[in-house]
Image: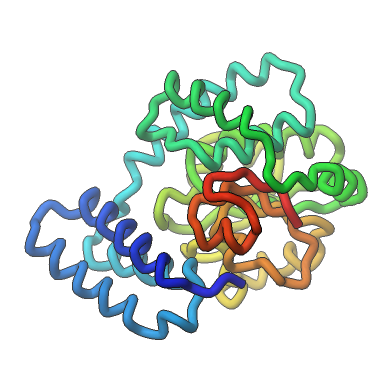
Length: 277
């Protein structure tokens, strides 16, 4: 698990600021909530991992504001991404292509870029390749696995996750997809997946109420049964890497190293794409 560094504090404050600007209009209320955020960051900061602290911060902002700051952005992200994946379905998609697309999708801000710019961004991201490329092992693990657990990350990119899940199901794999139960950041929820049609091809079991990454201590008994019997876990995004790396489980991490601490822990450059175990 990745411990928080001093750099994480700046990122967490920036995230809280963005959430407040989306959810709260009154400057006085923003300041009041931000004071509470600073108090949270002061408590046990060195002993926690960034995803745990971020979870506390975003839960606090939503509780104080009474709003989901990212609701509108999530909808726009999915709409833009679906326009791209509808074109991709006309292609002959290989496992490597859908895996690279799922990782590239993790790097794009669909809600800001719009579908046309997002398509250009996707093409640029696909050209980056992988700084850590364990695809051969991934392909072998997929071949051996009967039961696969897929941990989703953000809206927008879940349209690309859908392509990968469809490929796996189409090749005879039993896939359970696990989003969040309730909103946090722009992470996909059960309802987001159902709206994209995930439920027509595989099971959906949320792994927690709402947390950045996966807090096994908060996971439901139903989820833990799926976790225990999964031959392979596919985990999207940095939050899952932060909370699960080092766990005694066969986990493939698909992510973009968006921050310096995560990049350093992986031995790559900030912004690199990674497929690792």
